[in-house]
Length: 255
Image (cartoon, rainbow, N blue to C red):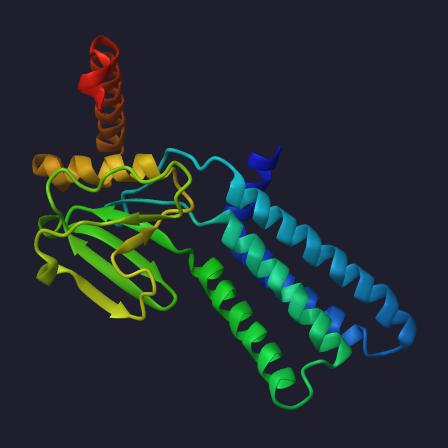
């Protein structure tokens, strides 16, 4: 059930974000019309905000899919947009609506700065959810775009045999560069050398990147459906072989 909700959230993220923004503004304006509407709509705003935030928390904690989107039109394998980020953007909209509806944006000093920071946070999450922050693997390298900037890492810039698998529930993936001068950054990138991977299983994306680092002959076919199926077969075979090797080894050869 939750998986279906998250899938719908990602697939229809722009209508959901646009509708939530309009509804949040209507609720804030409606609460100023009368004390009765303030009570009723205030409670409704609070409930919707809590539900959206709870959905964001559930999306964050769930096991991420070991899969990428095949995008032949741009010749890329890409991570899907984050359901957690979309739900969080909706939740923040209704939190801001509560402040707008009660007039808490008026004031001085800290009482004016905090609501302003809240609106900035809403704007950043809304923009990120609308655009869809993603990691893309292309024939020329690894790309990541965000509302604050972009990162382009040519395959030649990455160290052979890397990246290693991070923790099973890691939200970021550290990259190891052999030629860091080839890396191109634009804008503000808070994560630096790390990729944001909270919308895909971190082991899967790490194994995929490492595969193309070590097998340059297959990079040109990235983005094609047939290549994606071949990649899945290659990764599955490698994982099975590794597990079989470990099973037949004494304990000391696994350490």
